[in-house]
Image (cartoon, rainbow, N blue to C red):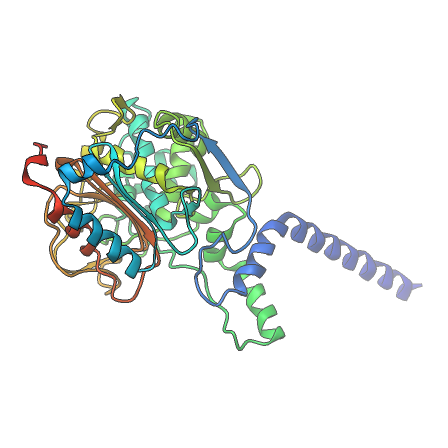
Length: 423
């Protein structure tokens, strides 16, 4: 009788554990599917493009064929030396470029695609996505919903009575929060056998870096990163920062980030369709990476930077906000503002993480000091030159020996002196 009772108890316990395991796997299944796919990747790739993920679709209302920007060879020749445009196109073709677009005075004067891409290709922006957060903050700050000097704890009750709560929104936007860095997904060796692959999946499933990158709650995962440096003392392009900023903006406005961005930026911009990668169905968007849109709409975001927040005569961003994005830099990194790069990048290495030796090399100084640019892993860049009313978009692979100044300076040299206007 005793043995039967013991067996009954053991059976019940096993059934409860099995039910809990099934429930956990079911709840985590979308995330687990991504983990399995990610551990099978031998290089970074364009995740999440390599495996299925739920997306939040926003539509700015642009009708196909009604984009105001268009290639105008006559106007291009009047302002930019045709030889410079040709040199830029040849440089792009020789450097694994998928899209090269050049906008001058609101007109698209050069458009080239390669590597299977075309005008309808939705490009995944990787780190460019963080700059969307900087653009979206302008309307919230103008309305007094939050302030750059608010401590994070004002909006993140999880960090009250925690040293991380003293980090300011300004420091998060400037990427000097001091938080531990998310440095990408762990990779599995191609030589790993079936058991090695299973072990990698189990390790990855519990890894907070993987949970931050692949779900199932980007906001909750971002909150688990600890301080690695005193706030305000160390610069690092850290995807945890824009993810936390998105969570704070959501709490301050009472509006999901993707809806706020669509209302305040994307629709006024009259862009087309864009997509945010979600941690789960009806969940939160990734803001550390992965927003997708066609090249023309990415270019329109760059036009906002060149036009002080205005495009086609419409003021999209609050007046002066682009200037704040560009000039609100830190002593730690005077070349980085509020989720955008700015100023004259000098010859040499521009580091992504202070003291890491990792970043983008420049063969020469930028030829102007008023450039504002968004960058995603080097190979995805949108440069805006307000004084020249010039915007350059280049999407493609980040190649060994990549020179971050080559393309902008080719086109800057091709501008005639009379097109330069006061800032």
